[in-house]
Image 1 (cartoon, helix red, strand yellow):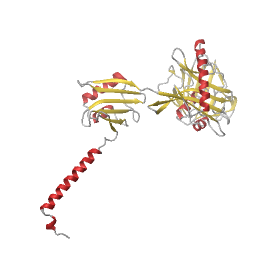
Image 2: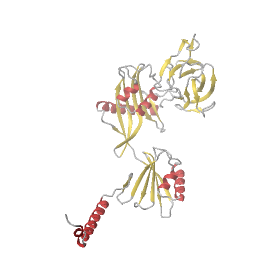
Image 3: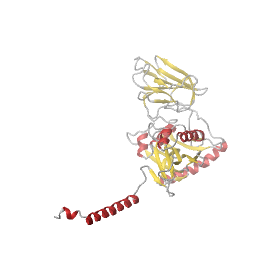
Image 4: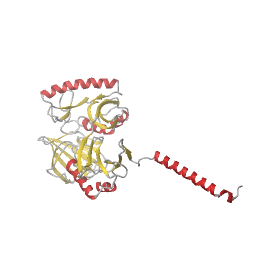
Amino acid sequence: MKKAKNIMNTVVLTRLVMGLAILLTLVAIFLVATKRTPSGARRTDDNACTSVVVVASGDTLSKLLLEQGLTHNDVNAVAAALKSNAGISTLRADNDKIEFTRSNDNAPVSKIVVIPSPWKQVELTCDNSGAWNCKTVDIERDTRAVYRSGEIQDGDSFYLAGQRAGIPAGILVDVYDLLAFEMDFERDVRAGQKFSVLYEENFSEGKKIDNGRVLAVSFEALRGNVQMYRFRKADGTSGYYDAEGNGAIKSLKRTPINNAKVTSKFSNKRKHPVLGYTRAHKGVDFRASTGTSIPAAGAGRVVARGYNRGHGNYIKLRHNGSYETLYAHLSKFVKNVKVGTNVRQGQTIGYVGSTGMSTGPHLHYEIIKDGKHVNPMTVKLPAISNLGSADKKNFLEYRKKLDEGIAELAKNPKMFIQL
């Protein structure tokens, strides 16, 4: 072993210092070469730095802008520009995104992009005078029509069969809403029935973003094959029509609550579960848990809302000169839906409960035609509108081409139609 005095002489110390300096220089070079942008940030070709913030619960526009170093004057200017030019006054947690761009890491924010949806973004830029300019940019969609088909198996619900066929949940909900005008999903679904759906998928830069609209649906129901096609009329409005061009959407839905089990049918003689004797059951009961939303079966006006011993909390809608619907045993009403209120089809009017003469939570649903109660499951419902002669001619030509496309997709389900 060397002695300490020999190790700590001047020459050795000099060499150690020089070696340490070289080592530190190499480390510094390595760190510069491997330096990364901060998490959630990226560098553009012009060396500008852009960071992306996803709005979280509790975030406000003011809070996020101040965190990025903007002044209170800038915050107020940006907020005013968003509200006046883009109609944005609040941010939605876990949905909206904001991009902040700087010329370099230490520079102030020069551009802000608010992204409220995959198909829209609002760009704000700061000019040389310090003013914030705002413009809205629509993102171009690459829309494709895709085809899915399936078959009901033993023990299936339509929803389970649809999932197995690869139909997204949101599209299945839309199909439910369409077919509910023609079908009772509790009684009309049987093993062996086939169905198909043509719907839109929206892409951007080769990546699927979301699903679009249902373009066509077919279901082998007990009453015959139900077909519906979405068609845009000459006046720009769109609707669903059967194969002959007649309005497929009826004025009322047979089953207001999707996929609800029928627990008691319409009958002129039914033993009342509470009273114990036989009397007419003037509607259909659907099992649903307390608090389930009750949508209006059709557009109309509230003509009664209140409480009685039999129905408990109930609400009654008038749809036209012939039809009314009644919804009973509600747990509560929607606050702003009162007598005289006009409601649209599908709008929530109340919530399932067990008030009045009821043995458990369910919806009692009635249809009254010309003052007489009719069976919601069998009554023939009028279409909202049929096509005029010119539109009908165009529809039949369109439907023929669409059917040809559907036939090709049925043979090659991995293909799609570019829209």
